[in-house]
Image (cartoon, rainbow, N blue to C red; front, side, top):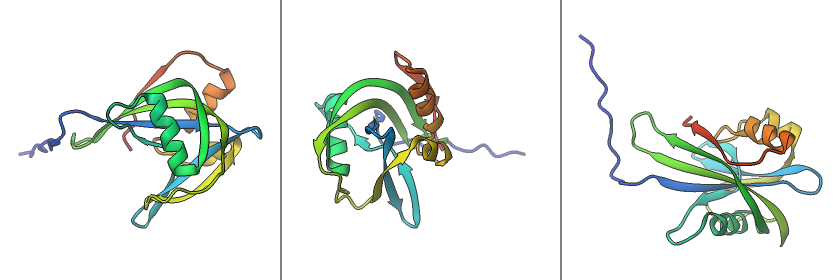
Amino acid sequence: MRKHKQKRKSTRSVPNTRVSVVVINSDNQILLVKHRKGPRQYWVLPGGRMEYGETFFECGVREVKEETGLDVKVDRIIFLSEAIAPDRSRHIVNVFMTAKEVGGVLKLGNEPVLAGLEFKSLEELRALTLYPPVSQQILDYLEANEKGIKYLGNLWV
């Protein structure tokens, strides 16, 4: 007889919203932030959790400043995705947007999860594992100069 896995319920009633920002510099390089969780390190786009009363654009500007020291002007929202844990214990709505650097000084923020930051070439992005896994979608977007917002589905890894 097979046992059914019981779905774990979250104590939260709404998903978290995370804003991620695609910043491309004048050398056609993308800004990435390295996160550390225990012994594991991985690359992400700068960004973070949206605060109550904050717009997507305000969140993107604030998070880039906190994590990288740079001031940005957000252009547009380009992707939406979700990350839903298989046991339903976590649900994150991801909003991806583009922005241009307008000032500030590149320096790593002081959040404990931050382990590094770097502008990487688009070729390097192609070879990296980015979380959530949107490297190819970003490259496709930049190459095609797409317009509109694309829904990428559930990207839980």
